[in-house]
Length: 240
Length: 240
DNA sequence: CATTGTGAACTCATTCACAGCG
DNA sequence: CGCTGTGAATGAGTTCACAATG
Image 1 (tube, rainbow over the protein chains, first blue to last red):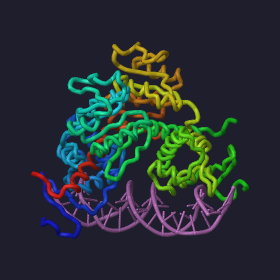
Image 2: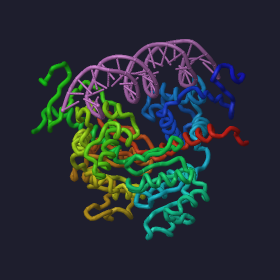
Image 3: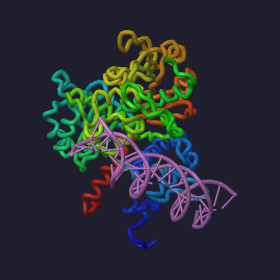
Image 4: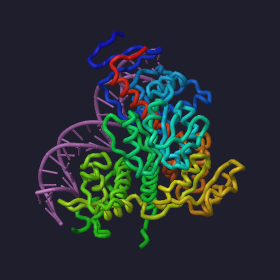
């Protein structure tokens, strides 16, 4: 198939798969979230020994519509075999390429409290090639401690230099809400423009900076909202 | 304004505010997430001494469109004053009522690893009335330990009885992915039908059960996906 | 008269339904 | 024949634009 056969559409063959390079198509952000979810479930069924998977099975595992699975993958290429399904290992490789998790990433963490420590030791990160190469806190009692061999807690003042020397690409914020904006500003000044924010507040950054928030309290609020609704619909009479 | 002036719309006056009780209108789930976000930002500006806030200011703080703020609140009532804005404290009270966080909630946690311990000690939960009244693990070395006074780690076998005795309403899962489904099943059997799942997998539950997932690895994948895109669009030539 | 509240317009996302194909 | 890939139909969510109003 020749390149440039239609305006704004380019396709090319990479690693035996036809891959869409269509820059015009807008990819929903929910699609990326789901593709990561597919990745998680594929890892599990690959471990269980599955070689092939249909969109229907993968959809069931992820609790989405089978057409959704096919459409999501369709944004990036044609990875399946009609009448058969998807090769688990091949699909996993393609998805990891899409998400850019077919390589390692260096991360720096600020805020070595209970949550920060848990994040540093989280095996799910290390298993997937996300490594912490820098750790910071403003508590003099913590500075100088080693969270594990080769990773010493440094003061916030050394953030810029340490982050640059260790080639940190992703900044992780696990401080109280009151500190989060300040830390984000420091990361930005050190040219770290991807931030994973665990603090329960919004940080304000320029467009060039990418932020993903993980706010536990919001998830709990959503849960209690739904729970209340369910309790209310369940009961016929409301007590005064 | 008389009650029942239109089919399927009911309004009534509660605590000085007109509150929509329209059961027909479908409320987007994103609206609930944002309302929780408004709650977070209102808490902060109330602390800073603000008495009034406009939809424009609140929207700016939460990085959403001002019309979005007004529409979200509009699903639940009329909380503002035209030409003036919203009373911070009053709006906060109304939002907490909407989210059902104007009361305390009992939670039970399974998996007392690094993450589980951090969750138990997370001040953001305690500050907002989310209390852990039960904690479980399958490691014999941990069972019997007290994470803090009055909260002893129990074996998984005692989940059902403990959860019922302590009136646990929300189950929190902080185990490895491989255990998550089993724990969810145990919570369900103990009539805990709201689950906050920190494990990096999907748990399968019947419709009556409410689940919110907090999957760190998905957030990181989304971040690396965007980061890769940005790096690619920034560079003109691709190195081999 | 500044700001809310909201129908209508628009944009974005999901699902359907079936053609395409191994 | 069965399952993928995808245009078309549907549905959901966001933003606009302005009437309503304290």
